Image (cartoon, rainbow, N blue to C red; front, side):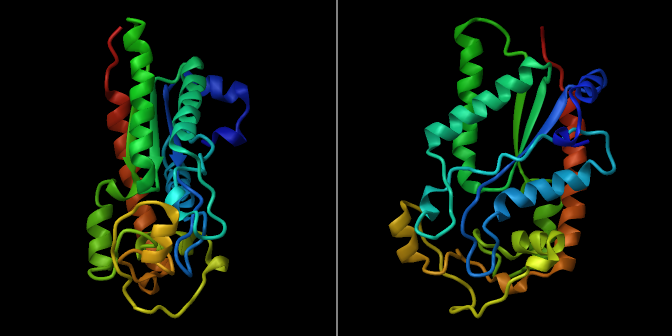
Length: 249
């Protein structure tokens, strides 16, 4: 069930049977010469939307701008400051919690978001702690590549040249979902170098085409389909376990 395609009455009915919701969250940033700028928000959205086809779960609109300041050296990247990102996550959670959602899972597609998402969770829990009241909700961060079976499948599909940015696994997921948007390019070197992540100009100097340790030419729609199906199954399992957790009070 997709929140943005539902009415308020339908959401009210859903809350009578479940207090759990999934928020796909990612980033709009460069992904090398062939990766779509929306890759990091598209992957969790694709997986979540696939999961809801076979399970009674609710998917929130995708939080599609994240913390990607280090990619601002490439045209098309849009980033929030960490403080802005944290504040926005807080208001999303407060809004959903006010309606009665008790389990809010953020399905993440961008590694650069992790620290800020966890900081946002800490801020929200601190509000309750300093007020000496129960939060009334539980928050969970889950990277789509950490869902059960996904990492193993990606290592099997891409034993070399996977890397950590503009990876063939994430490119493959978008290729499966958006076959008309598949791009091609010549890579030099074939597998990109690694390096630290700091500010935008330093990143661009170290990684001229935007890749980090990856060879996106290994991606294919068929591999993307297998990753999506594995991840969707893992998401349903993750949500089931999360939903069963009890909240005291």
